[in-house]
Image (tube, rainbow, N blue to C red):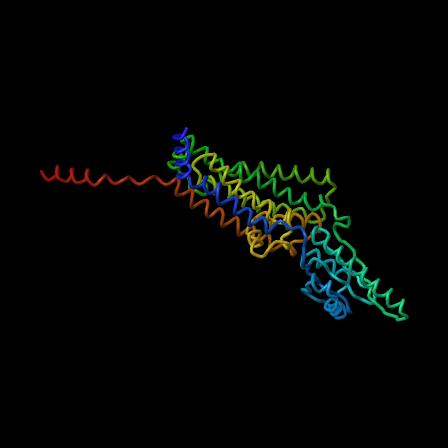
Length: 379
C-alpha cells in the first residue's frame, strides 16, 4: 500500500494541472467569490432631471442616508419624464429623479434587480424619515415643508426575478454548449490520431477552425432560438427591443464561446483535460458575470474579472433588449467589446492550432551518433 501511495504522490507531483486544481484553485475561488458574493448594492448611480435639479442635489447632500448611498452622475435641468426613462433605458444610471415642483419622482430601473430593490428600500426609509420629521414639527407647533419622493419602477414593475434571470440564463446555456462541446472536438481528433491528417490537407488553420465550429454554431443558434421562445412562453418574459439587435449580439457571443472552446481543445491533450479547462472557464462566468451577484456590489479588485468575461456583455445585451427595449445606440459598447473578443479569441485559436498542425521538425541525432558518423566518413 505504501508503494501505491508513493506512486500516486509522484504522479500528482508531475501532473501540474491537477495539482493546481487541488491546491491553488480552492484558495483562489474562496478569495474571489468571498468578495463577489454580495447581493446588496451599497451605492446607486443617479441622474437628476427637471427644473429643480439643484434642489434635489442640495437635498441629497444634506440627507445623510441618501448621501451615503446615492452618487449623482449627471444632471439635466431641461429634461422631463421621457428623458428620465431614456436614461434608464440606456443604462446610464440606476435611478433617475425627476424634479419639477414640490413632488419628486424617482424612476428606478427594474431590469437591474438588486439595485432596484436597494433603491426601493432606500427611498421608502427616507420618505418615512421625512414623514416622522414633519409629524414631530407639527406636534411642536412648527410648520415644516418636506419634499415628497414617489418611486416608480420601470421595465420590471413587480421586480420579477425570472424577467432578469431568463435573458442571462440564455447566455449561460450558450456558454455551456459552445465551450464544452467544442473544446472536446479537436481533442477527439488528436486522441483518434486523425489530427495529423489535417496537417497534410490543403487547409489553413483558420479554415479548419471554421469547418469545425460551423456545425456547432448552427446547432447552438437553434438552441438559442428554442430557449428564448420557451423562456418567453413559460416565464412571460417581455421582448421589448429589436430582434435583429438580439440576434447580432447572440451571434457575436457564440463566436467568442466557440473560439474559447477551440482554444481549449488546441492546448489539451486528452478529453479530460479539455473538460477540466472548460469548467474552469465556466465557473467564473456563472458567478462573476453579474447574472447572480450584481457587479456593482463586488469589490473593485474582483469586479474587473467580470469585465473580462464575455457572458457579462451578452447579459447586458439580452437584458437590455428583452426587458428595457434598448436600441443599437444604447448597446453599442457591449456589442463592440464582444466583437473585439471574438477577433482576439479566434486569432489565438488559429495561431495555436497552426502550431499543432505544423509538421514536427526532424530531431537532431545524438552527439555520440554524429561523432561516430563523422569518424566513419573520415576513414
